[in-house]
Image (cartoon, rainbow, N blue to C red):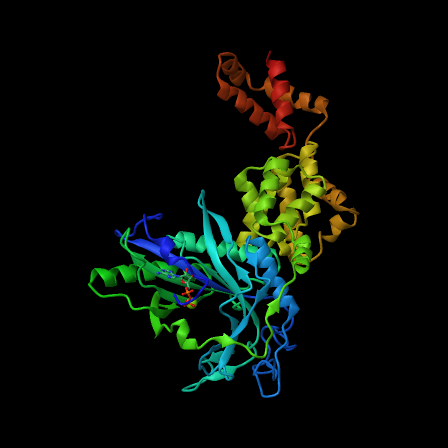
Length: 514
Ligand code: ADP
Ligand code: MG
């Protein structure tokens, strides 16, 4: 615990706050590397684009060749400020870059530029729901640093390749207090943090490409005991693996202790093939890295005016937005939380409401039919073939009783399939008649004959026909059987080929039956 900003150990003794596993309390703290979405590196102008040919995107500065000097990327600092503002942290007016010295083949310069004693972001917290319980995890710090290169083992037999493209990519390492007490809390924290960094646009969040990597520090202890020795599971790059790895690690540690062995502090890797964690190396202490302030970089000074300017440009955050949905649109807290899963989803909802959709109906469609299809096709709302204004138009035709809910689902199917397969909003036969969203929908309603019957004369004729041939049901209804009435409604709906307005049928039938 050589990190001077960490003060948590003393605060962490006492009563357990989470579920016990075989009599043990689980303690988890996270270190997350969020790759900042700048076009160029943290101290050079080399590109950060993913997937380039190996070793084509590391310049002399990234490799610290003699005669080069690093120059701070303002965009990276601005992104750190954004995170600090989003999480209620202190943004240090003056922070310091330090060299972390170690040898590894993917770090030919022999040190990584990071921040040690004075990080740019200090304190703050992440709050989220685990099921329906709210939970707050305190942050220790978030510091700026550069990424190292990558060792490639797969394409070589008996050798390793080195790709230095990633060297110098800007990272924000976000460190929590050991505040999590279960795997579920840890995964919920990681999901919330992922949502926030993508929401405020500082990180693309692509976990497969390594843009958001979590290290989970896990220990167990008997309730009331001092903190146990932790093992750090490195580079968890999917929420599913995260959960499997932490669950496995907890069971493994408890078994070790129960068998009388002491836990050794270590860095471990999760192997998705076996579902096990395996020790990679014993853990270095901070002192081993011989941190010292980087003589090539002046302290990072952040003026209050800069912070104020960034603050003024910050988007509304998910929690504030969810609260607004509850208070101004009357949505349930659950629906509001669903709609604020991502900026794109919230924007889609906002756009539908702005286009005149009743908020409750828009929410139902988005969290219902639309979410179902997005999940099934494993795509995001950004790829939805039905636009927000189209949904608003569809909802309008339900609200004005042109079509029933059931018919609306059929229209929706046509819209979705059309967008999905042709790339065009609708097949030619509909498009020809359709100028805008509403008339496109009307074209589908007409082509499929889904319009609700609004002519009460025609409906009365159908009802009279049904009543004339259903004496048994009428007698039963008069004898007090509700079922008989429903049967009559069903007959009328059938006779109208589903186009009668059920509420109207109900009312007319009741009057006619007296
Ligand atoms: P490093 O891993 O770089 O040495 P720290 O000592 O600052 O860094 O701790 C890193 C993380 O480990 C923090 O998220 C912290 O909350 C967590 N942590 C520290 N002690 C424990 C523990 N006993 N059990 C679980 N997590 C812990
Ligand atoms: Mg660590």
